[in-house]
Amino acid sequence: MKKYYCMYTAAALTTMFLGAFISADVLAAGADAKVAIKSYKFGPQAITVQPGQSVVWENMDSSTHTVLIDGKESPRLRKGDDYSQMFSEPGVHKYQCGLHSSMKGVITVASAGMASSTSAHVAPSAVQVSSPSAVHVHSSSPSVPKQVTPSVPSRVSSSMAIKKVGSPSPSPVAPTPDAAHQKPNTVSIVDFMRFTPTVLKVKAGTTVTWDNLDGSNHIIQMGNVRSPRMRHHSSFTYTFDKPGEYPYICAIHGDKMSGTIIVM
Image (cartoon, rainbow, N blue to C red; front, side, top):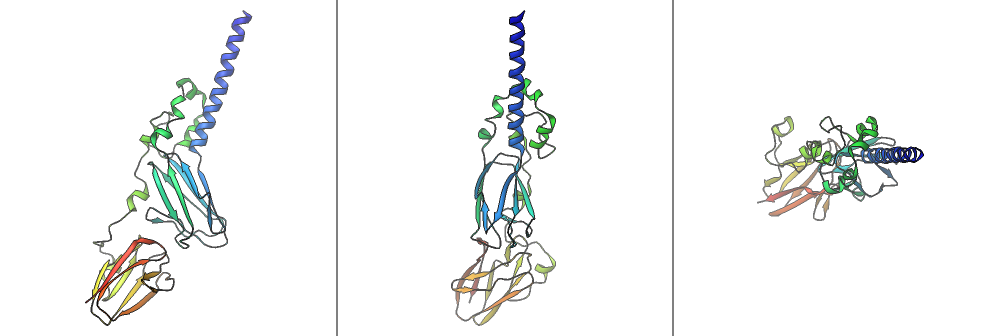
């Protein structure tokens, strides 16, 4: 009798510790990853998260910063503000501050195999031991199954905002009040960090104006020509005297925000 009692006690203790281990593991997988913005740096600079996990950036600097990632820029973050983004699909996401291009970071979203490596050891009985609140923390959308199984990462909805706005085609531009009333010899900087028109043809001796209609700051970099920092509703002009092609970029947001002036 004593022998069976010891066996039952050992089995109960094993189940208890296994359940506690799985619950802690589920909570850790579902918790938000934190990135601090301090002293003009992202810390940690490189992090790895699981599919369905969110990253929260918190500005601890006295200066204002933004998070520019996959073609999408966060609102301006003042001291104490934070910004979060959920990542559904595996991949590597490089980002920077939209106001200070030297501030850079990397987020790696683990592959489905890596994400499910922990869940593969979860027995059905152990899942019953974990608390419902732990599963809820791991879930970031109604489409995620409540039961924790290795297939959870693959069922997370991939319709995240980043995918909708990433790499938008700069042409043609959808008719908007700003684009519809495009002034001659003018390049407008519009939402989602685009120059419109992307290619502008002018005659030699023409003065071209860049109007910033976007909420972010921009700098025109064209060879050795560099504009001041252009805030919302500010402009920059330059006169082209010689024929040729003049490619340019935004010095803050890099090559993905580019255009060309063709002087005939």
